[in-house]
Length: 134
Image 1 (cartoon, rainbow, N blue to C red):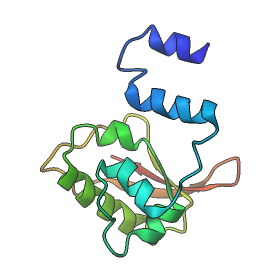
Image 2: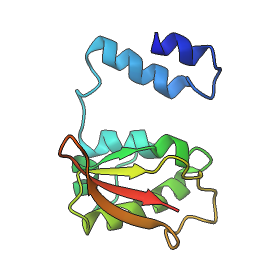
Image 3: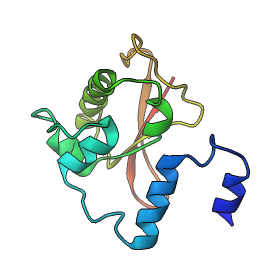
Image 4: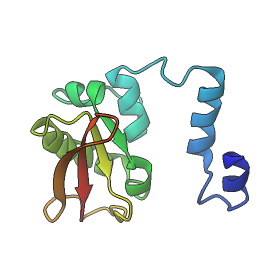
């Protein structure tokens, strides 16, 4: 029902990325490959190996809202932004990184996180989240 409702609202709600995730969930393969290289490819859109130092972030932190906030960025800009986010995460002890609803998408040239507020909170599930807002 959720998929049918989203599909009726057009591409903005149910794009190729979400359909691919759904297909992997149905096939039972969504979590089969969670290594740093695979996460890097999903977040940045390249098959290149992730830069040294980002492995802990890629292996341990789930990033929520990434597709929404990075949609207009090229590969280089995505890499730069992930480096900054990984630095924030490294000092937080959080399990997840969450872009708050309403966080406007980044555009090339405005990638720094100055002006972005970060808070660490515990979700009702017990998961620790680093919330990014501006």
